[in-house]
Image (cartoon, rainbow, N blue to C red; front, side, top):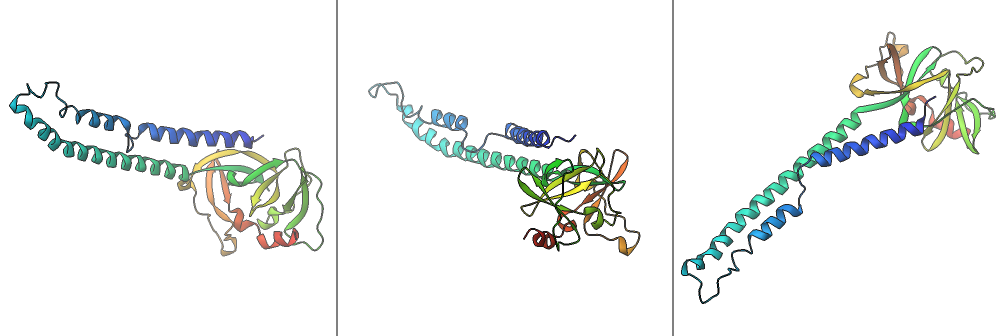
Length: 249
């Protein structure tokens, strides 16, 4: 059984570890106390010699001027280092964000003997089938509504939208996948939930179209996992927001 809570905690931990690693590998940020304290300790030494004013040698009079001439050069180097260090840290952060955005975590499942996947970020819960209440005059894509701990969930016939035959009797493996769809809870039946897989956007290939009638915008592409070809669905295009709004009105 897929433990969504454990997966979300693991994903949050990975993001936190990646951010910590970026900060550790980056050079000191601008305003680091170590360079500033060194600069401050170097400058005051010359103006306060230990020799009394009466015994001060004549050559010593030029030392404060020499130190003051070196101070701008030290400051310029420090400022240049700060600016360069900040740029390096920004580049590291951008690379981590790009890497995280390039990876996808998908829930895979079986429907009508076909393997499908959806983005796990949209999934709220996976529950066993339960009693469905029909809605009079609802859209044909709406099966009915179910109650999930007092919250109404609209059940949608995704099989019909994907041009599959109607589902038979429920089996011990049948599940309802509940997702967040435009701030509404929507569920659909699947024959069996498989597992959560990780892939990259580069691994998603275009949907192979044999005939123009097979072109479906609800399919984002296909990828291979475990030796099987899996279809990645676009939930926003698969589900009809207007039909769902009518059914819940």
